Length: 500
Image (cartoon, rainbow, N blue to C red; front, side, top):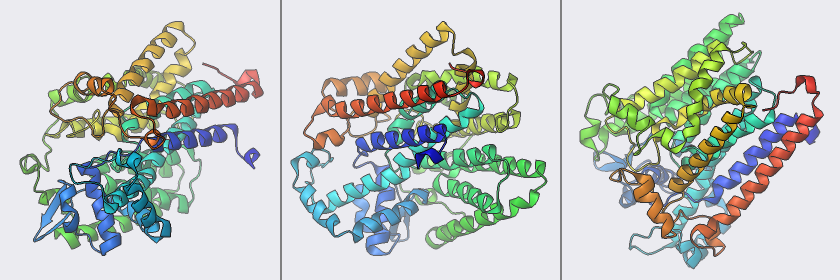
């Protein structure tokens, strides 16, 4: 059956499976207010048939108060997808029995932040539900993003090596790694945006059902992360341009119609809970009121301090944690000057640049640009798949040079130390009171053996030893990917192969 798929598709499938398992290995952070807000909405809907989270308020500070009741103040996209996951779990007879058993398991108790309240079956039930939902809305989308990056870069070079480097570096050596197995909305929104771009840029002729699906992806992006409406607008214009060039502008009808249906459903949700179709939960939040009342929903104008902090600041700087992404800057120049290829021309270049710039400027306009307790600039996570594409041009064009290979190796090594050092330290994300998280947070926690709880904990492995199975899994999986890549290259005529 595998012979029906191309070698690229087989490699992408293996990459997806490997990363999905790797992400699932590290448990979501327990007692994280951002994730709890969404989780409690899911539990309330399934168990109580209501959006009200009054019964579960003590576990989160991210809530909106309307009248005498409390609701999640988050964009509802993640929670909506979590409902069928949790509902399915609740139908399994083993679910409650498993919760009871884990509640008495010393190994599992060691993964929970008890906060002095002890470990009950209900709390374990919520924890298991969070693991399952985070897998669906975080781990699988992030793994799929890496696979799509690998496939899209075939437009840049047929060589498997450089494409694998970019895809794996995105997946494991950026802050995306920290948020892959969580109930935050950033990675899901990133997949919806990049998936739409991938579909539009790689398809020669999109059918009406495909265009309808793209409309659904774009609309649900906004339901998942409101700020991404800016990039959705760019992709809508790109879709219109593609259809206009093909003489099929009528294709906007299904795309727009499906998007409108989802938008109406989302506005109905807002109207039912917050009293207006465009009223958002943040307007009713009882926390961070001063920030929300500054400018428009905490938005002012981009500030230099924030731009520096997002990029090079030791507090939340992207290029401090993942300096290999600096190669995207010369990569954009190489892309612009390169041969125009189907799906990777200057229009696509413009879409990528617009997506990255809009996301960064939006983040820099927020009075809370650092994102509270966080690893890196989490609000820019949906931009990273777009940013990574241009690195492929650097590896494809300059990849044979010794200076680039040495430099890339050093950048990747530091990205591994910084990204894993922060992502796997402790059970919570670093406080925004810590100004140098690598030195003040990651270093002391690793020295103390206090790392994020993971599957190794259930095997009885404590501290950093719990990561050994994960490292072994990745080593074997990456080795297999490299072997498949070399097998593909050896089977390809030399005249059409460009290795890096």
